[in-house]
Length: 90
Image (cartoon, rainbow, N blue to C red; front, side, top):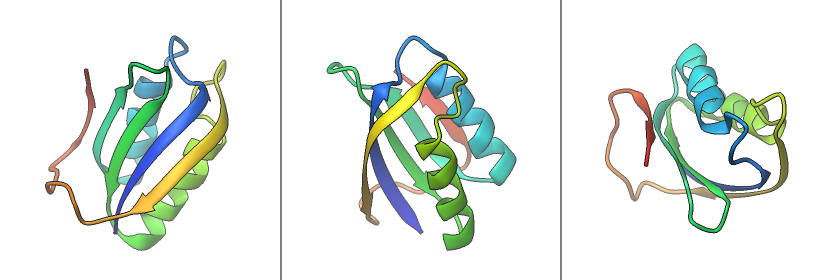
């Protein structure tokens, strides 16, 4: 399963990307996470359906203790490369 997510709320400046990577690594999700210029965070994630769904639930709760998610725009897609790990990008 491959999904893209655009996450808004208090998601920049609170360790959100790094905590997202930790959750992804724990679950075995592959992909990327990066900040957007408008203050959102963009995520591409792939893995088994069950694992990706669990990852989405963790993102909705905000993996960063001082962050929060106001909105999560989720799209199921196959329109990105296959990843071999999960990376924080810039």
